[in-house]
Image (cartoon, rainbow, N blue to C red):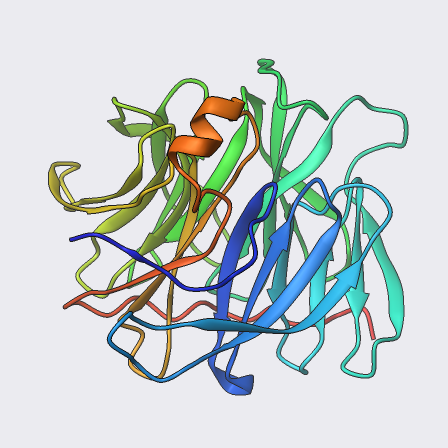
Length: 296
């Protein structure tokens, strides 16, 4: 199938869509602009589902990810630390994820089945290294390092039963899998290697199939639990950055894209680049876990 345009705004680097069903809103970020956005879904029309922007929060520096919390606030992965934005707009600094002055920034993040925030890093200019982090923020604000040898940490997902964690190392084109539980994290293994683009954001459906957005790949691919490609959604934009399931039935796929790194000719050829897209799928997504706010 082919996704349809869901909005009128073209973003530099839209990323990390998350559906907050409790508050009937979509949350996403424009990374380099330092914006956190929320929006609502319109009813289905002949042109597909639309996303209307309802709020834009601005931060100094980059914003790698933003996730809804269980109390209605939003946890934001700013450049090097977490920030909690309360429902009334008040902001509270949370834990610093890595020491000040390190040449890295926070990137994609998500909540594990226990409501703990897991977030990765990349270099400020997305140039690959082999020392990027994947960390988990514990309930007391301490940091547990899960990986310290990544090139560019990106999408995260957990299996339906919560026993496996999937994570993306973009420049190696790898999706890792490891045993996961409330009190343990097992050794990682390569689940699959992607071709035809670079794996970026990721989501999982109720059949334990991974949906992976491909940077430079013009779409989102669906992989079965054995890592076999079984379906795809085409997107008329080269840089597909992330994917989420939204709506009451979690069957509306929301796809973010970017204009970042496109040449003027590519922008002319793909004028919808940077916009949000939607598509309807048969199998619903797994609802994301909200962050358990321990900072208030």
